[in-house]
Image 1 (cartoon, helix red, strand yellow):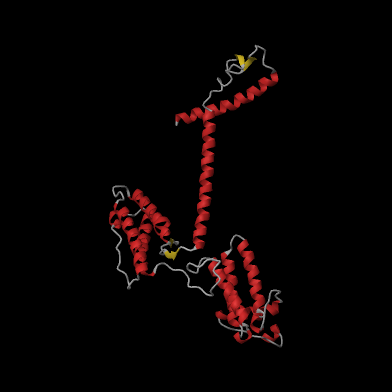
Image 2 (image 1 turned 120 degrees about the vertical axis):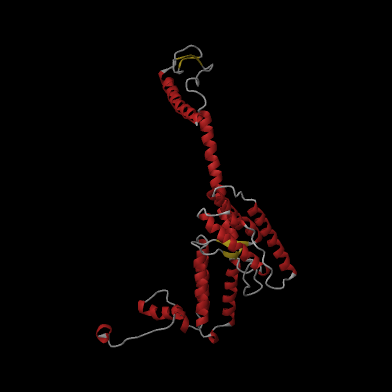
Length: 340
């Protein structure tokens, strides 16, 4: 049956998930005549070309709204390709070029400690992490916040939930710098405990829960953020992730803050225009034309004669009527507003 369906020759290729790229791709691509196929496994000199290709693709991704996932995928594929070839066939210059570019990308995304995109003196990275000596304290704070936040989201906070958060001892001997950092977080935790104690427990469970949610947000957005630690809340009952604040996170928050400022400015502008429009309606339409520009008016306050006693022309009266109708609507709206 196999020969009948597939012919006299059958190629069977198999392997683990670790071979999904580039091995499986290389096997499949010739059959599909993939125009983007690059036989990385059998090439001695193509890694340099692959690097230039990934640089160009990365540049395009960064220009397209800073597409981080795509860039990371390009980096991953290049590293996989490098690790797949026979290293004896790769020149030292190509190896250095790839390593330098990957380091540059890591620096660009703020994932290499205090390194900046301009840091070019070294290859490799150390990464970023929350302060080692303060981890037990941060974990204790994050776990209590998770618990409070879960209860507050269901309006289930009670007085017994608001006991002070414990301050665990350090898990190891600390350096002078680590001790200073830990002291800073102890002060943060003490301030949070103070605010927990000041919550009004005479409120209803619903109102108390709202206060607790506001405190949880402040812990994440201010207390810890200002000390380079970020709590990433997740869906369901999953605990928050304790992350260091990177340049990328800061850039994202600055963009969000800029959008929020723009929304607030637009709202203030709309409110101001609405207030000005409402205030304009204070003047009654029956009084709007009673000025020295006219000498006689009808019962509705529309001018019938100008200041010299001449009868108002039909064309001018038509325009005055439109202005009168418009002011009538504004005044009626203003009067309704006064009743509220």
